[in-house]
Length: 286
Ligand SMILES: C[S@@+](CC[C@H](N)C(=O)[O-])C[C@H]1O[C@@H](n2cnc3c(N)ncnc32)[C@H](O)[C@@H]1O
View 1 (tube, rainbow, N blue to C red):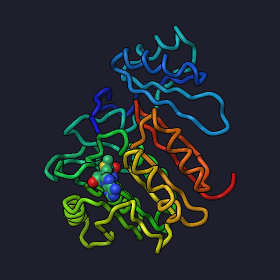
View 2: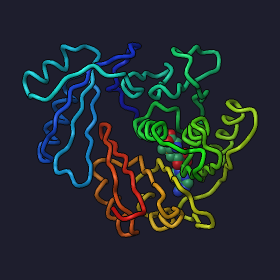
View 3: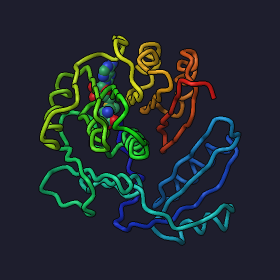
C-alpha cells in the first residue's frame, strides 16, 4: 500500500472541524475539492439506511475550515485532535486519549498516555497507514474487549493485536502467512509486555478453518483476499460477533460488500479515509 501524506502535522490537542451532509453523487467532486485544498484532512462517513454521506474536514487553522463554511455551508467547531489528523512519520501517533504509538523506546511521547513501541521493521503496520488507523480508532472505542475473543488476520507487525491487548484484550489470536511478520510481531509483544499472551500463528487466511469462533475479527487485507476468504472469515465469527474489514479501496467496496452479504452478514458502518474504506459488519439481523 502506498503511504499518503495529506495528514496535517501539529501538536495541539485541539483542531478545527467542518462538517456537512452531501449527496452520494457529489462525492467525487468533494473528494477532488478537499484533496486540492492542502492543509486539510478529511473523511467521508456512510451509514446504511442513510442516503446521504457525512463529510468531515479537519484543519489546524480555523480560517481554513471557515472558508469552507462560507462557501458551502455546514458547521464548524473546535474538536479534540484525533491521531490520524496529527500523525507524521517518526512522530508519536496518538489514538485519541487511549494510546500512543512510538517507533522506539527512547523516543519521548508527547502525552504520557499508555503506549506501544512498534519499531519500523520488515513487517507492515507502524500505525501510520490510514487502513491501520481506522482499525486502531475502532479498537479504542470498543467496550468489553477483555471479555471478547479477538482474531487479527494479516497481523503484520502485530500492531492491532497488541493494541487490542493494551486495551484490555485477554484472548487474542493473530495470524499472518509471512513467517517473518509473525517473528516480528512476537518480538514486538516481548518489547511491550512482560509476559506473552497473544497466540501468533503463521497461516493463510484463505485456509482459515473455523475450529474456534471469535467475537471480534479484524482484518487489514487487500480486497481480493477479503473477497476470496469471505466464507472462511464469516464462519469464524460467533453469533452476535463483529467483523471489521480494512484495506479496501473505495472502488472495490461494493464487491467486498456483496461477498459478505452473501455470507449472511449485515453492514453496520462504513468509514472512509482518502481512498481507503473500513467496513464494520455484524452477524445479527438489524
Ligand atoms: C496491510 S498489512 C496489515 C498489517 C497490520 N495488521 C496493520 O493493520 O497495519 C497485511 C498483512 O497481511 C498479510 N497477508 C497478506 N495476505 C495474506 C493471506 N492470504 N493470509 C494471511 N496473511 C496475509 C501480509 O503479510 C501483511 O503482513
